[in-house]
View 1: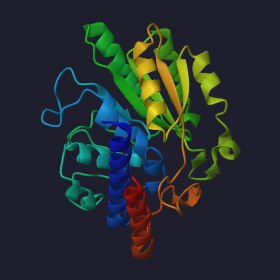
View 2 (view 1 turned 30 degrees about the horizontal axis):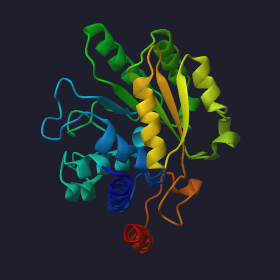
View 3 (view 1 turned 45 degrees about the vertical axis):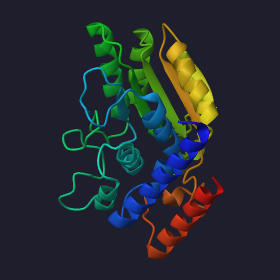
View 4 (view 1 turned 90 degrees about the vertical axis):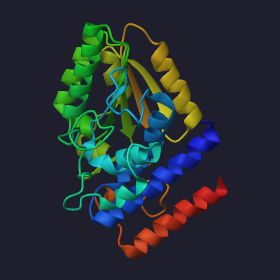
Length: 275
């Protein structure tokens, strides 16, 4: 896909996020929207995956460490063809396979069940080590929240990845600056994020999470980096694309009502028209 096509797809992914969370009357729109461009780049450009064969042995693995932003993950998977986009409306409904957090037993394209913060990166590092031990050439990617990296388990996994020189592993931090209780710098500052990953033996790249040219350069650089894992610190806007959600911590885990849903979709329609 070219940059314009990726922008258009990311806007569709955002529509799916807002629709799913509104339909569920619960969920996490803020961090799903901030990561929408990352999800889009991964699933439409970067990852070696096949919707027709979700379990193919040589596929790249993706683990959503900040599992509460499942609406973004699901919307990207659905738009990529892993399951019908229409099913996004069943998010969190009784009997739906689209649970509030990713479930690898029931959702095509999900490589790891996640939701307990800090655990996803550990599972992803294990997958990357497995590939090395087995001589497989698939790559492993994980997406973390910047509030999530306050968890100690994240740094145990980072230490291990750096020590084992897992150059088939990429950790992406969605740095939108906000968590459920407010500004991450006030709650328990993880800054400087880039220097911390460097200290654990990572090659570190800082990017604009909403610039597809930036993302392409970063992921290409990660692929070319040998002998060490890569951390991509992606500066983003929480709630990106929906005017009243942008940079508002209150939209971390709040669903829009009918009026707000209409406004959000109107915002995204305008973005689509401008493209």
